[in-house]
Image 1 (tube, rainbow, N blue to C red):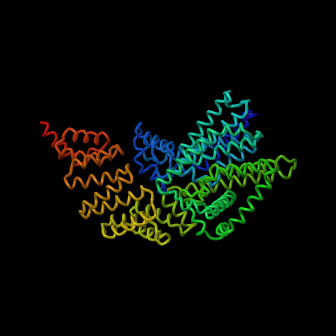
Image 2 (image 1 turned 180 degrees about the horizontal axis):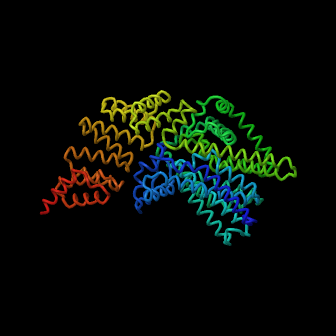
Length: 611
């Protein structure tokens, strides 16, 4: 099998697809970080700050933010060692991966269709569809473009595995080796994002499309891959459970979960055709109005209609394949087993959309091949209008992700009752020093969600900055109460304990303060702020050795924390460990910080002692 019959046609197709896709997403290269998980994965993530064997071991042996995607975290670690906190480097990586994925989509579709027209249409739609903007321009969603790269590569390797004649741009490799390559790429995909667990089912669909007879041989081929899916499925559930994102009582509400799943399917079908009012977060189905509300209420009837349509389309092999590909690949995020909170979300359509694009491309190709001189110009104009419209919408949507304020303004302009949007916009206002607007947004977040512990926590932070300590304490207490009732992820609860610990320290209630820092560290062993703040309290209590121990932990987590080196140097000096004090001062100077008057004073005293 050859991917191309004409090198010139192939290269021209690739040039057109890549050029349009790059142009559409080029605004993202000037975007910054947003406070929608970018802080968790990059800007405030201590794990990625030090590229070392120990860091790699930590990444691969621990859950992070209710997920297990070590390869994604490793990619951030490598980038941080190069770009530090320059967002342009991270955006470039995401865009490069998306361009590679677009090429792989073209390659895969050509292998299963042997049609350049189909391949170009599917790859172009994949490259520029507005639903894919979130996966590409959102730095924290690196896992989507990364897992898809390996996912698509695994499918392509499998297609070569089941075809003995492998000609074209791939060198001649034994059939067995193609299976091994497919297996390895699948493993890498799972290590990037657990949504890849659907691959064995997709490979059965490839068998079906390529007329392989179903039997024991096909099942045996998939057993190693199925075992990987089961293992990573279990790991994912444990990861979510460890952060309280998986709740067994919700998974038992079968009817509600089925309604959500059907709603999700119809929602995606509508958005893929009419990508209007896209948002990085949508209201819960029950809170949406108009058409989407009726969809949710009519779920049982819609399910019956969908089943009948699928049964009727089963006689049209390629269309049937596209529908089942879409359903199979979107299945993990339809919340039949509730994990996480986002249903629906644009990013979940990154791979599933390929099935729907494939249906459209085949229908287009069938009509286009008919010898009708009037039809072809109409089809060409139609596809031009579709590509132009989607390109324009995606180009504009890239600017929505420019920064946190623009992102949350976009959400609230479409869905003004989303508590999370007020919460995060308030956080952005607070970071910019606009505290009055921040307080206003946090209060609105509480109006739309009375159990928003994050809103109370953030209100507490504002009052803390204003030195209104009693108001801050009231809000932190409220946040902790809500978190304990709702079973919040450990990392979030740790932040509130740390914040309340600072209030107690400011009030000189040092025992209460240390107790809260202890709670924070128990919940998150990598929480450098809690170690740092506890060390500061020990310093005030003149427990310098305890303080040194905590500063050691801070530096272990973040080797570039200048304040920790500075404070530890002071503690070493006060305990008369002058050599270590001097080493810390040298380290600070090596990192480019040497003008601090306190450190200058210590250096002067050290010189006198040495003399």
